[in-house]
Structures are given as C-alpha cells and as structure tokens.
Length: 215
Ligand code: AP5
Ligand code: MG
Ligand code: ZN
Image (cartoon, helix red, strand yellow):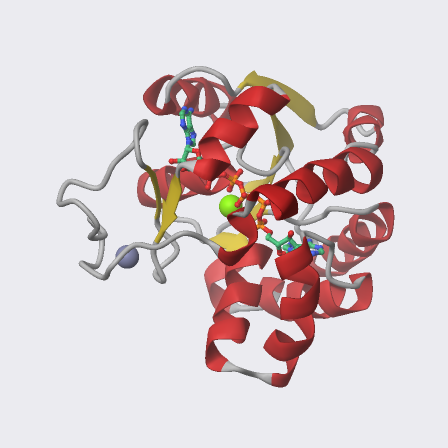
C-alpha cells in the first residue's frame, strides 16, 4: 500500500500518519521530520535547510528529491509506505513518479486533507511536538502527562516554524506551490478528498474506509 498524505500545514497529516503506522505497519516518510532530525544533528543538510524552514519557505527541490530517492530504496518500504509532506511542488511530483516507476511501486492513493485556514492556524498555534516525531495539541490532543510525550516520555515543545509569521508564510507557500498538485493527482485518478475538520478518531475511520481497497 503506497500512499501520499497530502494537505496544508496543520491539516493532520502527521497525526494520522502515526496512527496508520501502528495500524498497517508500514513506515511514515515525513520529509519535515527528516529535515528536522538533520537540523538537530547539525548536519550540513540541516544547516542549509534550517534557513528555509524557519521562514516557512520550501527547501530546494534537488535536496528533497535526493532524500526521497534514498529513503524509498530502504528495505522497510518493501510492503508499502506513507509519504507525509512530499511531494510539495510539480518537479517533486514528477521526480517521484520516475523514482517509483523505476522501483515498480506505483502510488495507490493520494489522501487530500481539506481543512479551512482558520482551523489550520488554531491547530498549528496549539501544537506541541516531540523529538520522536509525535505531535500533540494543547486543547484537541493533549499529552496524558502535561508537557511529556506519551510515546517516549521526552519533553514536548513548540516547533520553530510554528510562529505566527512563519505559519502565514507556510499557508501562502502551500497555496501557490503545493495546491496545484491536487489537480495533478486528480488527473491521474488517484485523489481522494477527506473532511479533515472532523475529530482525530473520525478522520482515522474515514481513512481506513478508503484504504480498505488497497490493504
Ligand atoms: P512539515 O513538517 O511537512 O510541515 P507542514 O507541511 O507545514 O505540515 P505540518 O507538520 O505543520 O502539519 P500536519 O498536517 O502534519 O499536522 P499535524 O498532524 O502535526 O514541513 C516543515 C518544513 O520543512 C516546510 O515548511 C519546509 O520548509 C520543509 N519541507 C518539508 N518537506 C518539504 C518538501 N517536500 N519540499 C520542500 N520543503 C519541505 O497537526 C497539527 C496540529 O493539529 C497538532 O497539534 C495536532 O494535534 C492537531 N490536530 C491534528 N488533527 C486534528 C483534528 N482532526 N482535530 C483537531 N486537531 C487536530
Ligand atoms: Mg507534519
Ligand atoms: Zn516522543
């Protein structure tokens, strides 16, 4: 089962990906998480990426295409994968098609999370993150022990690019550079649009109903 989780910042891609990993036992490939891990480690890639990320800009396509190419070749993608946060531009989508054609792993479905802007801003401004990739929300999905990750016990924190200014720019970047991919995947007959405003468990049920066909 090869799936793309698609949608604006704060739509719930990462939240649902964590639940899907547990349910289907296929890996989540989050380019945002991969980049943030590089930033934390202080790698060359991380240092270069940080400047873009903090401003809410996209990291250059060549960098992302390289990351995805290597990641999809790893053994854990054999039975399927979930892309979260990739592709975000037409060149990234074209590169993905080429890579997957070579690997003979076609995309089964693109899950398009639809959530209005006001809700996205509320979600992002209340988000709490963990270094393990888990994400919470102060109101909608608080950790069981205040301030600590349910999954690994580490302290949760606010993401550097969740500042008001960066969020506004991320939404703008989404609309101009990423949203056109909706039509791209619609034309390929792969797009399934979800009502992402429902609560986390209901969205998960809707996704499972769609994926039934591919599991
Ligand atoms: P990335 O990490 O991908 O961030 P993003 O696209 O901005 O998406 P988010 O992670 O903010 O949203 P999400 O949909 O995962 O929401 P979540 O589940 O956490 O990218 C970050 C940066 O890295 C980019 O700006 C760019 O610089 C760079 N980058 C990454 N990939 C790139 C690429 N391919 N090309 C170029 N640059 C790239 O949920 C949000 C909040 O809402 C949480 O608090 C959650 O608890 C809550 N929530 C979730 N679902 C619900 C619900 N149903 N109801 C109520 N609350 C909910
Ligand atoms: Mg995310
Ligand atoms: Zn954690």
